[in-house]
Amino acid sequence: MRLAMLRIENLTMKFGGVVACSRFNAEVKKGQIVGLIGPNGAGKTTVFNVVTGVYRPSEGQIFFEPREGERHQLVGLSPDRIAKLGVCRTFQNIRLFGQLSVLDNVFIGNHLRLKSNVFSTVFRLPHYTTEEKEIYEKSMYLLEKIGLQDMKDEKAYSLPYGMQRRLEMARALATDPQLLLLDEPAAGMNPQETQELIQFIQEIKDEFNLTIFLIEHHMEVIMEISERIYVLDHGVLIAEGSPSEVQRNEKVIEAYLGVG
Image (cartoon, rainbow, N blue to C red; front, side, top):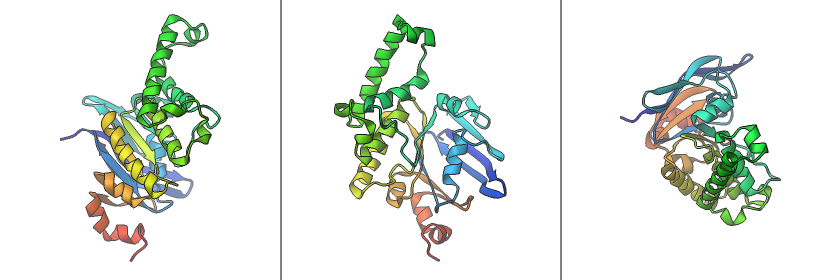
């Protein structure tokens, strides 16, 4: 029986009189790739925003258990504290530092784990220079894994769209996550880029021993890589199960595919 790394219990998020998510329950087990789908405005990104501390839920609990016997209540924690625990995300709209180099974008992700204090950094004491060297080597390793090591000095904005997506994931990987939340990673990609992304997600999951929770509108992505899928419609969970079970669910066909 695999450990439930993320457990969401009765999550409700209200914005004034609007209920974006109502009593949502889900769990993501260690080593899984779990999908979250639904029509536009279904509440998917709201779930991610609550899990990562951007919003505090109106009701509900969220537990993160990276290892057996270690359990954290995420509700009430700041986004940086949640990231330090091992929960990191990417965004639907790419949020790279476009004017910085490819390498610098990955460097920034590493700073979450810096041990050196400001004094050591300013005066470049031996501890900091050693740590800086380690960060450089780690960043170059990540760039090599995504095929961007030869473009390390290029500005991030100059990369093709699919490579910008990969760079954003590399920056997230630099934080040493255990749970990676991907918000529509295939958005804006052509069919070839989408297939490459599917392979890339599977590769980084195995390489970095990740658990992945993703939102995606591309059904071929969700159906090919997810072990389990949750389906939201107007903030309410209408279905859950394996890809084949979800594909056959009449409520999903009606709400998500617009047939009924």
